[in-house]
Structure formats: C-alpha cells, structure tokens
Length: 113
Length: 112
Image 1 (cartoon, rainbow over the protein chains, first blue to last red):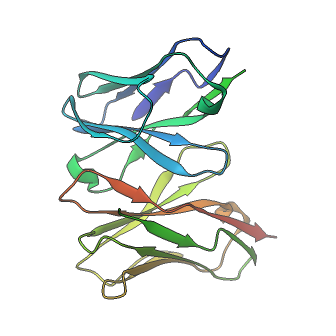
Image 2 (cartoon, chains in turn brown, orange):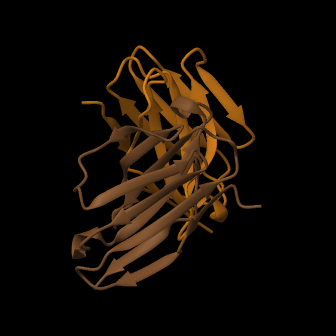
C-alpha cells in the first residue's frame, strides 16, 4: 500500500510539449506539496495545497499549473516544456503545517530534450 | 526571507566513525525541525525530528540536538555503516505557517 504515489516515474518529452504528473495520497493528510529537485539535489517548494486550497505558490513560471480535485489528489500540469524544466519532481503530503514531517512520493524524473 | 544553511555539503567518514551535520536557521519562529535521508534514486524519508521545546532527541544510532538561542540544530550519526551513505536534508518549519524550508543537503559517504 503506497502512501503517496505519483505517476509516471519517468517522463521524456520534447521541448514545447505539455505534460501532466499525477499524485495521490491515502494517508488522510490535509496538505499536499510539489517540490522540484534539481541536479544539485536542492529541494525547492513549488506549490502547497491545504484541503484543496492553494496556500503556497512560489515563484514558479505560470506554465506550471497545479490542480487539486480533492484533498487526496494533487496533479501538476506543465505547458510548453523547456530544457530547464528537466528535474525530479516530488509530491509530498503532511498533516496541516507540516507537523510530523512529510511523506514523499517516489518522484517523477522529467527529461526535456 | 527564511533560510536554512546546512554544512558540510559533502562528508566522508570511515565505517564505525561518527558523522555530524549542522544546520542554522534564520526564522526565530521556527519550532519544528525534521531530518530526511535520501538514498540514491529514492525519495527523501523522515528519519528523526525535534520540536523546539526539546534540546535533544535520540533514536538508536542517530540523535538531534537543538540550540534555540543560537538557532542551530545538528544531526549526529554514531557507528556509521555503509548503508548510512545518502544525502541528508535538514529542515525548519514555522508551524504557524505552511512552509518547510530545506537545507541544501549533505552528501554522506561511509567508506567500508
């Protein structure tokens, strides 16, 4: 039983394409996140939703659009992909305000060619 | 803005030695400090955490210490083993808000 599952695990696509990454958690958490991890391993927050409501929207190009249909799902859609979007994207969930830490998904390695 | 500095960026130790990773945070309202371990190609996983009303916490070979006055917290791993090799992230969160600030990570190598 995977607590936070995200799909796909790998995504290779051409510049200019549009792609989506899906995330689902079965932990009953209210808060979900998207993080981008670059080649230097730095974890950068992109978005956070609490009970389907957007609460954190960092300086992210508006080509990135999150969608939370319910509190167990947080999807990420990326338009007009660029080479610099290549990274590992992690979904995570937590109790409100991150108490007791995050549970991360297994990551989606996006490669834009 | 809020910031967490983590040192060293790379740490190499001999199996059986101790490893210490240090972090400093800037937001004095931070009150929860988790540590994550990320093995190669895997997800970050919570290994230990400490809240601001506690100065030290231990779980088998790992321990965390917190100095709120100096805004420092540290991860200590004793009797290191090759399977401890990973990237370790510290983090600080102000639970009045919703944002966890991560350190830049420490790549730990344990040589057999």
